[in-house]
Amino acid sequence: SLSYVSLCCSLWTSADGWEVSLVNFMIPNAQSNQGSAATCNDSSIYGVSLVFRRGDCSGDIDNESDSDDENEDVPSQKEKDGYRIIELTYAHDSEAVLERLHLEPGIFRDVCDSSQTPLNTDQCAPLTFHSPLFRGDSLLLSSKTDNLESNGETKHLSRRVLVSAPTPEFNRRLGERRWSDRMTEFSKSSKRGAAVGIALISGRNVIPAMRETLSCMFKDYSKTGLRDKTDKNTIRLCDPIVDILGNLSHHDVEKAGLRCILEPYLNYSSSRWVDRPLSEQKSEFTKVSGHQLVQSLPPVPLALLFTTAILEQKIILSSSRRSILLSAATAIIEMLKPLEWAHLFVPLVPAALSEDLVQYPAPFILGIPSEDRGSIDLLNSLPPDVTLVDLDVGRVILAKSFADDNELDVGRSNGKNVTGALRSQVLYLAEALGSVFGGNLHDKAWCCDSPLSVLSRNISDKDGLIHPNDILWRVSDEGPEADFSAVLKICREFISELLAGLGACCVWIEEFKSTREKSKSESADSTVLFDEDRFLHIKNLRAQGRYLPLFLRDQFFGLDEKCGALKSTTNLAISLDEFDLVFESFLRGQGMSSFISSYPKQNMVHF
Image (cartoon, rainbow, N blue to C red; front, side):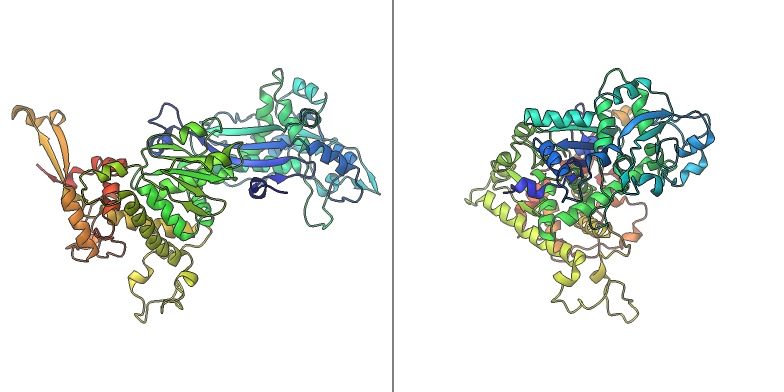
């Protein structure tokens, strides 16, 4: 029988029995302010890991498969040996070799130096990848040389790797017992699994380039000229790359060995980014992350997650896919803008810390892999004030209680059940907001009863049949990230509606000790007073359509967009009568306080 975890497991398994995963991760800076998302953007460590695992029974299964002639998808031992890596071959500074490694003559690029400038202007365009792997004396791999079958007999031509520096000690260690054989024997004798891997890390979010680097290296080392019985898929073997990575664990091998191995793949993957700002990689990762989150959660659960994040509740993301945890956490932070998440933010929690962090007293966003040992028991016994987001099933289990229930209950003598009432309001708001998400993501299904459902998204307005409000959040750009763009537009509109009229409720006061010191603005004590009653009154008027701007938005020249200027439409305005507890909980959040503190003085009443 298969367990729930094994059914959801997204690991890819090679023909020689290795489970392979390529995972994005982020490590918050321990010295930052509680590892919050606001500070993590500039101080965290981003990385991508390529890990090979072999279970405790993999070796037995592998040996049985080799002796089974009927299993055509598993290569024989002789075929496997033909794809082994026997050495790193040092090539001198010749033009042909350097072109193959994507390097300029006389220059061996140090991949560990992230501050190095582009080698030349030609590298601004994506390079054509040439594998550093070759057989015998040939420096070029072709389909003919890569095919081991010749007249029904297997050629024993092991492969070599072309590198830019001599590595004699690495080659000596590589000639000893294979690391893959050691790990297979260890997993069989100890009844435990074995793993080996490599991780690329950076102080900036350059995950797209790092992921492409490791993916390209994996594809290059694992490819074979063999096909499965359907003759459609290439059979991949991981023993060659496991031998290389395991060999690097010896302390006496050359430090340049890792650099030489990664060099051609790093140069190739970074070629299309080298002349562009680092922020573009971060932007692309955010778009892809948002698309993955939208694909993992239906509209209503997605809206429920967004609502609980706005109210700064304790949120745990769970999935057997480790990379989706970072993607979902990144997308949530993007959906909250211009508000900031100023609390604990750990997208991938180590198993040793998970039990302690779920008891953290303040709001948090944590990512817990469901396949870790003990994770299922932990997720089934969470505290009552924690909201669980299951990204594998696509559901959000709302917390039974909220972190600020006690504060909301102060001063209420009507015996109202604050916990139950706030929970009902959150669910009601998520259902309404989820219908807006669904109508813009899947309009044919969510708007099937609408008389406008027959209209296409690109229909012209020449007949005056479409009101601008009907297509307020439609996006014209195509591509897999277009769905997240639509969600972002709705989130921006909703948060802007929450913040609308904020300037009329804030009073900036500066106090000076004397007239003499008045000319020195730096000596003034500034205080911002917030009129909560007036703000809630404005929210009620907005919901009734009675509080509208005198001028259109484009007539407010120089007004900061994040300030929440009033709009002529109130599509997403919510009523105080129905969501009073939601408003109160929102106003008590750290995000709202930080936003008011950063609000421009010129947009407040000041004296």
